[in-house]
Length: 289
Ligand code: PXG
Image (tube, rainbow, N blue to C red):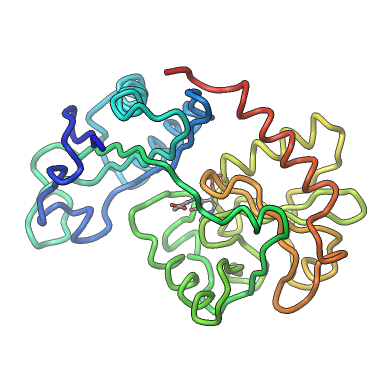
């Protein structure tokens, strides 16, 4: 495997950055997770735009232009001869000293692109649905660390993941600071009630996921009424269908939440139809390499 670091390719074992990099010392940096399907990179522009937005807010100057980063992603995929891949784009503050002051990082930001194969969940869960729970750790407050910033500081979500894994569950619902459903640790959440689609609004401690936006777009085109609306756990429990969305997970049905069966306990009709439409879209849309 070849890894791109600051304009050069390195073999996996030689792909190294400094222990003084503030990405490691403080989680000071931003990232994106991107997917390609059959040599087409899905929603590449949207991911690059979001990376630059995250960087803008944390005042991190990305040394390459958007076009150059797009090139780096495509080149990494070609170098690794990957047809279907998961691409991790990472930009850290770069090498500094042991103080957290970003001004101590005198050089340029570190830009890393890794491309690999990924299977997040076994096929069984896509067919039978996932069981999830609500965990005690809440999503970051927007005024503390805004969830819109895809920063290298994912401890908030990792704590929630640990709480789920501790009781033998693979994914967790995180509530926002008011106790409403925000999202899962690496996925957005949707419910279906009487053929209407609901998902929490992005302002309440929820990442505006690119897969989330794609699903909303597909639903609107299919004339399914969609609502970006605050959701309580009760509304999730009594929903007809529930599913999660994310670049890595794509669309995955949920059949049990906090021990409550969702709908019939099987992946719902609308969920299955959105999964199918999403798959079709990934086959025809994207940047070729
Ligand atoms: N919510 C959170 C908190 C995320 O981190 C999503 C939703 C889905 O967004 P997209 O744009 O992908 O539809 C994410 C992003 C991984 C991994 O390796 C995945 C994400 C984040 C961190 C790691 O599985 N997903």
